[in-house]
Amino acid sequence: RGQHGYWASLRVKPDLISQIKEAQKEENEIWTIVEKLDKQIEFRLDDDNPLDIPVWKWDEISMDFFTGLPRTQRRHDAIWVVVDRLTKSAHFLPIRKDYSVSRLAETFQQEIV
Image (cartoon, rainbow, N blue to C red; front, top):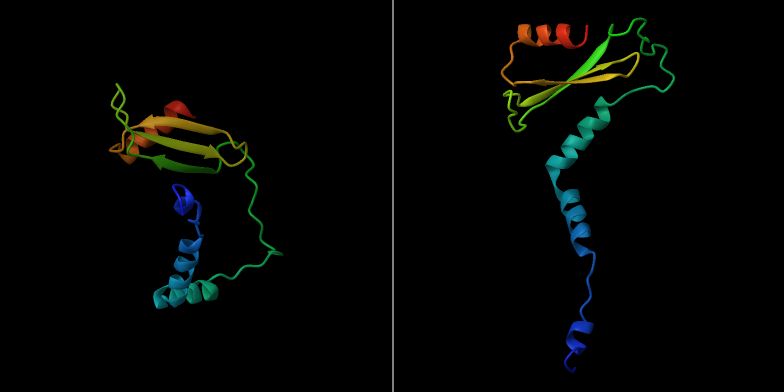
């Protein structure tokens, strides 16, 4: 085949993805989970009970915690994200993951209210 003939005849086939899909089809545990999901998920698009729209800012909030961050000079190692549902404004508050609920409430009062 010559010096470059062997390399020219190699082909890359997208076989791995199809092998994974076939293996998943044969896995009974996956099918059990899928069947349970199909039975549990039931919703209507014409729902008569839409979500209420908040009237006042900071009346309804959502929040999330991002932990496992490198420690800052002030020993903060997490971020507390608080989002107002009405205005969609977000506050990113540096905290420590070991803050108590009362300390979080104090931080909320100082930074947001």
